[in-house]
Image (cartoon, rainbow, N blue to C red; front, side):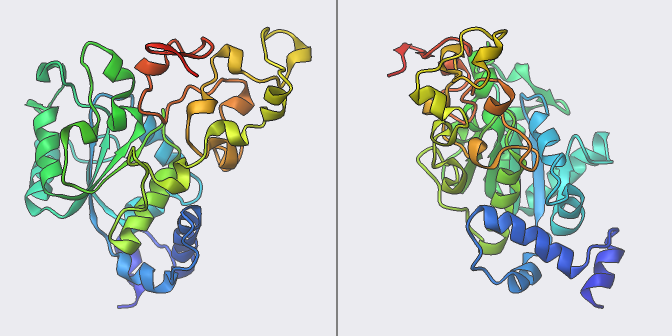
Length: 310
């Protein structure tokens, strides 16, 4: 049976050319242009994926599903086999939980964790009558690799600053391949690029000390900020309603771009349409481990927990 007919039987038609275009786009973001995509596409297969939700707003799922290139439908239906995802799966109740348990027993899957895990008391989050912490640890034990997506799943995020004292994946798991894709929410290209890298190489991309892919988190937002010229000229925005200050640096309004590593200012969001600073919102530093607690209050100049940012 040829590949095109097989893909149609799987429930979606995606020809070889479209698939290669999709994987090449994701690879380019990670600097993988030298790979032989025809060979890697054949080898990719349909690995199992478990996607768990902790303390979160589902914003990262919404971000990943809103991507335009690659089309999320192609990835979900033809590239991977998502066995469990509370937001998009058709199954519910006992049927859904049985699928989760069966996949955990099978092992060797990619575990995607969205949201933090309560640390103050397990009773803060139960799913299907069971503490989320227990389910997560069981799933992590048999996973081939773990992708933590969003600020909450990586470093605790907003929930880390609440009474639940939410923790990130690497706070609870060690000895497993873990990649952190922070952000509130994360950018879709970070997830798809990392996933395709793993499928083609069987390993995670080069990471920094905070377990973030260097390809996306090696430069500070400030380095490529469209308002950097005004920063150098000491043109700082003080009055949102003054037309003369349009485009001024947002440092005095709490911008954390000088201490935040991500490619937001380089590639922008929504297929290059916009980014926080470009839309007049100061960078909140949502890709850093100190977010949210350490960078709050967000709209105060230079404040970090414990004193002023140097």
